[in-house]
Image (cartoon, rainbow, N blue to C red; front, top):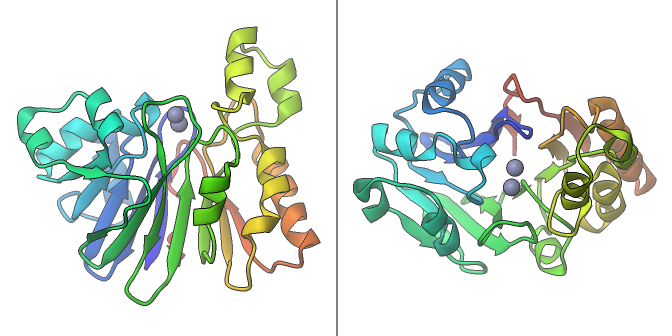
Length: 257
Ligand SMILES: [Zn+2]
Ligand SMILES: [Zn+2]
């Protein structure tokens, strides 16, 4: 199994998971045309997906979802709450599949396990995606705080894709209005570098090989700060896991899970 992040940040998020000839696209936070451009730029035909999974209904995760699904005849997999919040054509809605927290779902060779996360959307989820050989990828895209439920699911991963949204000092002294700062830093907003780093050791195991830093704010974070915080946490628990930071404007390299 391998994964590539098409882009990540407050302006749009999407990633692809591939196993042989089967592919999932998770979130579609770019316009349909931009999404197609990015998919092609990592060597994939936009018609070559099996499903589109949505973590929650915020625009930076669903901007191109309805159109991409319709154009490429893809079933959307999302929680009931998310499906109710996204505007979909009747055709796309009728082929949608409901995800429920704690109920694993087989999609082709993939086993997908959704779990609820604390974030200010209707029914947001994180995902663990497993292949037939037991390789496990965990994704927590938007996360207000590290909940017991989420941390319980994110065990025994090979690759963890995790939000490191902001540096608390940059947020505090940055340009956002006070209520927005409070929302971002709140328990149902976004995860800071420090929160990610402090709670990462619980998720470290011998098999964790890679931590992908996701959803960095361009206004309130710097890649070097996020990398330093997470790198130090991994170093302190003697984990050899590597870290990769992802960007808004360009896809990452493919990563083996
Ligand atoms: Zn969100
Ligand atoms: Zn988001």
